[in-house]
Amino acid sequence: MKNAFLVAWLFWAVTASAAVLNVEFHFSPYTGDRKADKVEQVAGQARVLVNGVPVARQDVVAQQVPVLFEQREVAAAVWAPAASLGSSVRKGKNRLRIEFTPADGSKPYRALFRYATVTDQVIRTETSPGHFSETNQTGVGEEEKSVTGPVSFEREFDADFVEDRPWHHQPAVTSLSDADRQSLKQLVRDRAAAFKPGFQPIYQELSGITNSSMQLNSEAIRKSKCLDKAYAAGVRIVPAADLDIVTTGNPEIVVSAKSGQLFGPEDSKAFSRIKGNDMQMCIGVVLGVYYPQQMLVVRGSEDKWMVVR
Image 1 (tube, helix red, strand yellow):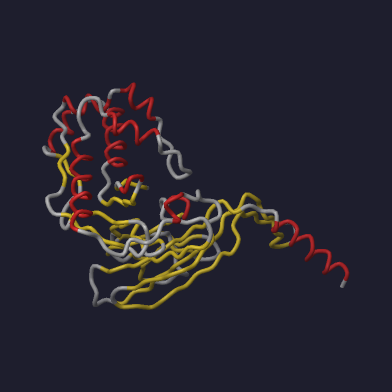
Image 2: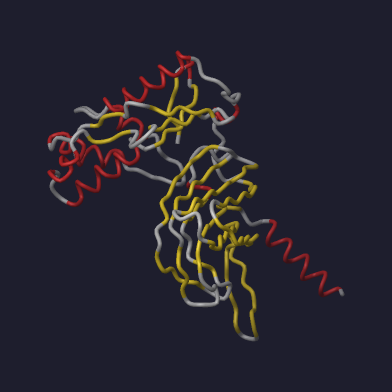
């Protein structure tokens, strides 16, 4: 009995000191048997929301995917690490929701939702005499449903590893005035217009991106002159004519296009005139970051709107 108590105390002492680095979520819609080596992934569209704020949208394609490990884990169609889901993740308690709409709503399938906490400490376990397994994950679990049509999963999680931002503590925006909407439309137009020689607003924002999910070397981007070369090749950015501006029950406002892209090229052929893989990759990364297809916006100083990520 004393030995059992000692083992339990030692296990508590080890796990209590482990720092949480991330919480990971995986979603897999499939047909087939998880006992097999492969299953068929179901086509459709997935949406990830954090605290009611949509933070990601992903198309899921029909294809064969592997089933892995002794736990028979279906390869994830959607992988959502909390540390990479943007600033809508709060320090402390959060709620994640994954919604999936299949391309064919008449066919049954299975939906698998898995989650795990990632720590900075490796736990070593003897699986059989002389054989050990190691992992830095705790709180591993899953939910599985047999469904036809749309499906969703929700789970609460703690995220003390993320940055606590001042605007997290602002009151929720529950309504927008006509002046607010006009200001937000102007914000989108100004952002599109920032793609011009000098590119100061772009460099300034890129230099401020220092969160754990993304590190950009803005000085290297500036020195490469990939933005100048893209502009010389004819790349211009135009905003969507019709915007969808939605409150979320939080300080964040979601701004997207009612149809098509929020930001798009004036001439899609201009990108093909950019020479060199490095230049194309550089401009692709910058445009993907600075011109997302959905913007999260909060009230900043002097009641001006600012983009957050």
